[in-house]
Amino acid sequence: MTAARDRYLLVSVVANEAQALGLYRLLQRSGLSPENVAIVGSGYRDCDAVGFAKPLDVSRQRAFRTAAFTGVIGAVMGLAFLAATPVRIFDNMILNILLAITTAGLSGAMGGFLVGGGVGLLSESGESISYRSKVERGKYLVLVEGAETLVEKADAVVKAFQCESTQRYYFRPPALGKK
Image 1 (tube, rainbow, N blue to C red):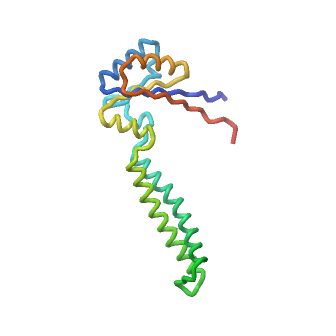
Image 2 (image 1 turned 30 degrees about the vertical axis):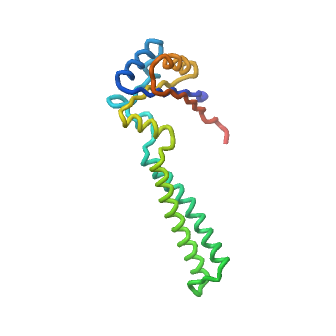
Image 3 (image 1 turned 30 degrees about the horizontal axis):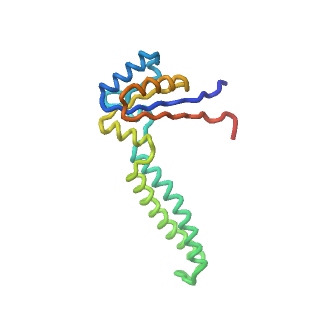
């Protein structure tokens, strides 16, 4: 079995297709292989192909996660309310417990779903969502992925080019055999 290798990524944002092609050619002339360089934008690779998150998917995930958490908290608080107050709807204590857990849990889940989904939809958190929105606004991304030395070489080339922004990322592979 071979060990997983560290991966590095360089993301450069450029204003238009001509700049993206110019940077792509410049990177190739400096010795970078086409398999390490990609253009993301209209007419080239799309955001889904390179794994940039969709805002609605992120919002949906955040809504369900928040709803699950607040639903459990709501159910616990419903039980605490039932234990702390003399309020009883039914003569049977089991029915009162079920009612407290159900109503408080559903209320918490509904609030968490609305808040979590709203926050996820209104805030563009996460850099992949930010990159996706730049591409949707007509910008282009030039990506370089590979070993550290390759990305450092590309970074030196990109610094001489007129990019709107450039960001480097490091991805550590998961440790094999460790739990």
